[in-house]
Image (cartoon, rainbow, N blue to C red; front, side):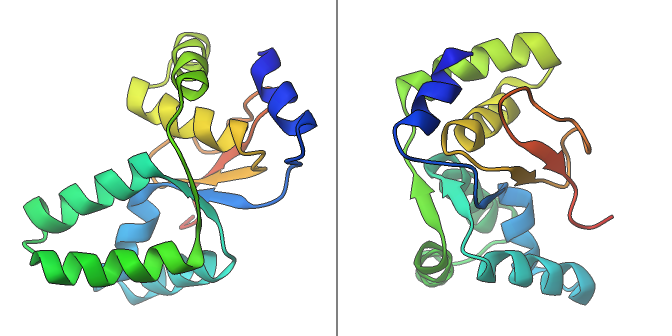
Length: 145
């Protein structure tokens, strides 16, 4: 997994947390405790990926029935508080290796790979392997436990 280390050597040290889409979606939840925790994480100016933006958009429109203007307003807020990581071929390649090594679903592995390549110490997700420490990458943590 030399790609992780070479990315960090290029100037990005471990620092921020990375948020999965399920954490951001709790900002829209009636569960006040989880919404408050998600807001606190968002205020820490975390990293998210374009994949996270895509997943949030899909859930907002299809599952929550939000109008496009409401989705735009929500995503504008999210984007103003996060560093957005692009999707890259290096991320895709690392995701395949992580999925094979750790038994992750591929799209979850894409999130883990992005967090790894962005130098994040912690990846906050409600539905991944809580406590898993990815070699050279983040520790997966459920922020609602």
